[in-house]
Image (cartoon, rainbow over all chains, first blue to last red; front, side, top):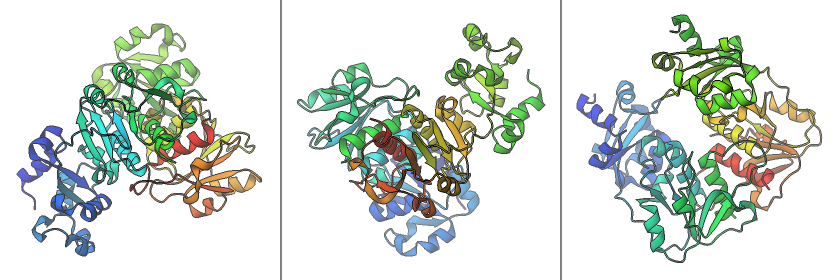
Length: 249
Length: 249
């Protein structure tokens, strides 16, 4: 059985401040946990799991020291899980230090301005990974990428994509001559664009769009043309379409 | 103050069975409610709102009989709301009868096989509306489009896009010579395709993908090529990219 204090501690990791103090975050469910065991076992601090999952993953679990795996009851899993339906396993994983934003832009980099919905941020990380991007740079106003909902919706891509948090405007100004594509409502038709070799792809906040100061740094403003009546697109869908056109082919 | 029985009734509309019996569903928040007042006031059965919202929307509220607007307290709004943060107004809106699936395909139609996540379904409805689609046909295994989370994430597009529920396979077989595009993992490169005039665009379940029986009805299988390492794309993002390429230009 887990100690009350331990349960409280794990629950506290739902909050950014606690994650920062503790230097770790939670990962849930067999699929995601198995992906961490495959790709980053040294980052795993501890795994709490139901017995059947531990039995079924014996060989995979050899990748980490045995005393880092603890069998717990369904009741305890329910207490520590942040999922609506707890799913067999929860691991605590070491949070990497904040990555410096890249200074040399030799590939497309996704740049996110105040993406507040954790599901949107996680989905964007997953999409960036699909299209081969290696780096995402977030404004400090974005959701924290170690928020449990972000981690879950990346479906493991958080292991592969480097994510930095920085002040976007000064950072972009230091880069010099780099193509900067901003997604706005009155830019060039996205579908007339060719895939890019390198550059920044700026996506703005869910309701306010891109900060005008950032949009003004764009070397090209692009727009997904509307044919129907919806007022806007979901931010993660818009990012997906822009990445598909600029980085997909 | 709202009667206990009334509060219970409104809460019950979170469940599909209750919505079907009652023939109505809930719409929340100023933006969505105002969109319904603009575009479909005759569908509104009743509006429960905080006083400041009613005051601010007096002229818009003239579109419906005065006795259909009820000022309630914040406490009551909290009780009837399905949002984490209740937002000023909740309306009950008449559920349209199930729309027959179209028999004449003169435009692109989005066809959804067992899309289970309400947020994904709502986002797909919104994206379809953006790209000018008028009709979505869902399998019976899809989330109910009047689920509160679906309604909220359509951002009003549920007012404009016709949504039918049917047995997909027999329906597609009755259509005869219609182009059917299926999104699968081993089809033709989506980015080599040209926009289509008409046809069905099939999107499959979040984890299992498209039912093989449905995929076998495709006249063309298409794939969003992967350049990185993510195992899959979010279903709503994948649908967005496919719609952008096939219906966007």
